[in-house]
Length: 487
Image (cartoon, rainbow, N blue to C red):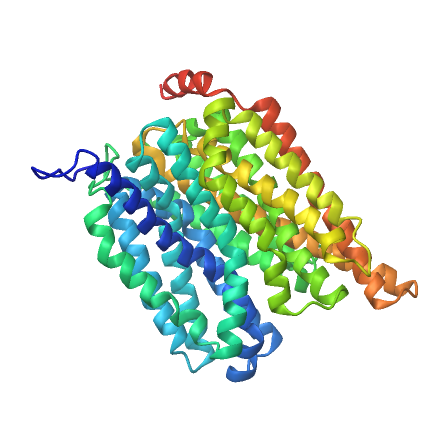
């Protein structure tokens, strides 16, 4: 930290400043996380008010996803080059202004364009947030606790967004799901410059690998585009397969560029470090499992059990409370006691068990018997696993590459979630269609599809648990590996 303590202040003043800085940082991140679910609740109202067709309405979500997913890696690297705190503020300002534009939108085109700018701001904030935590907290115990708080904001914010979206849309108008960001954004912009580290860039160079930036951003945006349209166009359609093929080709070109350029956007040596490679692979599986839980269980409760939006939001409350208890202290103590490997594997195993319980949910299910036990296990799993996963992804990099590592793990979460949701939604729809064709009643047919998807999600979590338990290196071994791979 660059802030000095003035004479006469308490010795623990810088310590308090760090935790207040974390609070401000998490407020900014919460605004981004809320936006991913708060908007979904308002989509029917937006459709009616602005006269969107179903296909056009999808772009209210897709425009955000495209720029958010495409710019995570580049945003993280720019933070390394020119300062994490500076880019965090830039991202918050961009997101807040775009939220104002979204809230004032009266036409389809203006709303979609504003959502794309929102996604760009959100990508920058998300990409540098973990780096700022690494900058603020250097002691292992404090860093583990701070990561736990950040993990709770990321994991619990989605459920809060769904509840808040329902309240704002029903009591006010859909415009307020965007305008609610303004006071948060203004508060973060006011306090962040005084509290966040004022580093001007921790990389040894200001050179930006432009060709690498263009190819990887294009590859990620095209991959996201193919994924978000895959369900509508068909996963085996020539267009979807062609877009995915071009995205993979661009990614291959990116890796060729990175192997040859003198100052690469993403040094390939990062992938030689086992914990970085394993944690990002586990992150993809974990995100796929979490999306299976959050979205499919909400659909099960609404379409099979007949719950209303507020009832669905309240149904997630036990999971959120358990997540809070573990993320805000217990998870950090588990990491300090057992390292990163055992808590990560245990958390993912709990999540797999929770999804298995949902995979046997009946058509006339009761909350206390058929939903709450799975929610408890999934809340327990998320509360335990998220912290060690982030520490594994961020712990083995130099400060000059922490933004890149942050962008990488967030890209893994984003792509894993998007791919997982697409695959599981397609699987559920296919099974439901088969059941309907066989004469099964609609509710039972939907349940057949959801059960199959929950089972697949449980498999994702279980594979992640096995990889974490067997392939992650203990902290000491990983620390010894990092300097060796830097040469």
